[in-house]
Length: 279
Image (cartoon, rainbow, N blue to C red; front, side):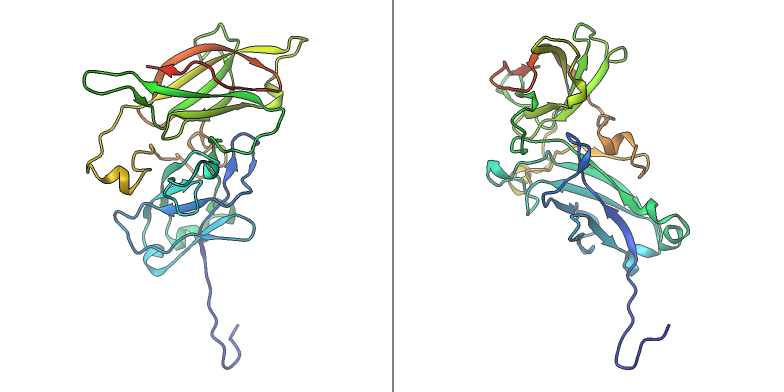
């Protein structure tokens, strides 16, 4: 259809639409979250736009449409993406996801739903909690080694499983997942359906911590410029809602179990002050 005289017609086409999911509630995230791009190889890409629905969109541009485009999506809980604001802004643990945008022609040939990405975010220290939440707050540390002092284990992953006596996770029932932040702190919340039936006020769960190798910054000044420089880079196998990387069920490459402990959780209360996990 031709535009009336004096008007210019402009068509914008979606490259990827992003709906962030709250891993604790399995519902869309309602608070504003910063989503940006790691701009090492493409410093002039357009920013993602936040829509009134709290979804985010990256639109096709000439330099994005003609060839598959690799990019790294960075999701953090702070307005500016630096993750260096006060405690009250730490609602979710940051993530970095490696994606490849299809060409515009391939995207147009696929169903519109194929342009939707739903990454799950794990609660962080300032996540808004119910007064009857069941779970725990704890810290994870790497032990001192030689001249290196005891320090926070950054970006760990955590799993709660039952029965607590079963140490083999392949034979256990995983009931909750969580992630640690740059300070080694994690907040693990059990869904209501995970509570074991019975009359006991507590339930025994096994907490298993996973971590990757400790990385050294390529530039000593990098951590000061970018507190998220070592967030593990994850590559989804697909953009499907069930993809294990997007849901957090698949651990980052190189992660392995480093600590495990049985913890008694009181139903309807958040456990605090438990002994640190160390490895």
